[in-house]
Length: 75
Image (cartoon, rainbow, N blue to C red):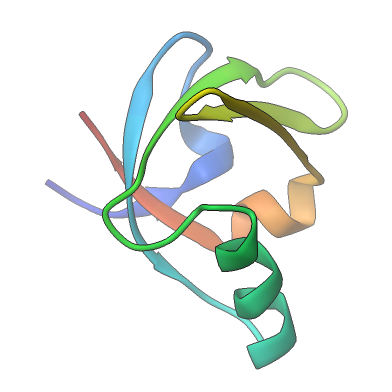
């Protein structure tokens, strides 16, 4: 299945992280939040404004620009 940015996934859907694009500091920040390759995230909110995703028992708020750099595939 094709990889797409995290903000393309609909509310209530699950996605597996394939990669994180962007500069080293951005990648490090995203990975420190628990969003590393292979992690499964659930989209809690994806309308206007920031995305809210659930990784394990943790909810994270991601700006749209940051979410655009997280490449995922829907599972």
